[in-house]
Length: 427
Image (tube, rainbow, N blue to C red):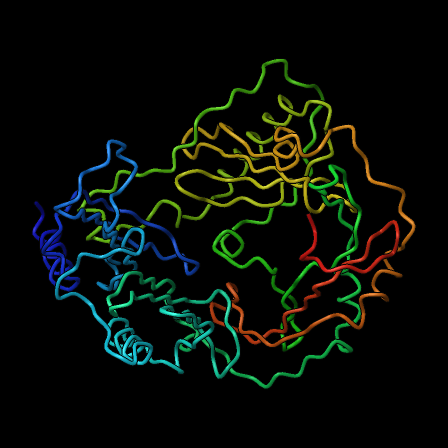
């Protein structure tokens, strides 16, 4: 066995008191974080020596320790004892008062400081949940930490995700935003959606505010869904048109996101292909692939779909398509197309509306009821219910966290009756 692997295995066994365990399997994994950095982990599954192995290889015995070590930092990223049951001897055990000792252990394990890098968000019996924050202001994307212990104070669950880089990549400024200053933008964000009502098996037209981050310095906005897909995608905004449908039927192929990572790749921190930019030539090939796919699968829809973005993920190039219509289609009309990054052939897709239809939730012939409320009326109804809260958001263009206001609203307006309701009640 590779000496580096053996060293990590031995360290893990000693740190978490796994004398009554044996290493059943281990493997390497990698992901690309939002800073476009490739992160490698060593995953280990430790089985209790006295527990019988399940016949199903996909199941782990109660008490199994599943542990991930981040190879970039050398720190433990995940510790999960299956069914919150541990047989560890001389492992990580917190002393009373448990919360204070658990926080002390987290600081020692991560090199982060409570109250400076991570802040307590939720506390339950035997559990603590932390998120990243700067001077009490939330951060997105946020690092998070979870820790859980049993009645004896023994560690049974620990998660440390995210680089906690906001404090180092921060542009400090005074918060000056208010609803009055961004009222025009707020009105634009109130949009109509055709929402699938699962209980009533019908399409319900509603007006709701599409959340958005507004930059404090007045230079623009950042989409609400922040993640690597959004920050590293290429915006195409290409209307997809074709002259003739293709008679050859589209055939789905299996998407395989599992990678066989070698020890050499992992310990050398080899950049993932997902970090590579999509060249102009590759973009052109992707447009061809998407057009061919649409002409096969949605032959009558020329001009209806817009290729919004392209991004790499798990060795594929994913194309996001939305309809060219303005109202009512924000929730369901979305297609994700998987493109083979070597052959530039569309091999699979996910159609959001099709999923609902296949599950029998929506009938394709259903249509929304007649609209009686205008967008302007809906905005005026929601005006006093809007929320604007400060938050630090990572700006991929500036490569730093910038102060924003999160524009949000927890209520919506029924576009038929004018009724105001909580969006949490949508079903």
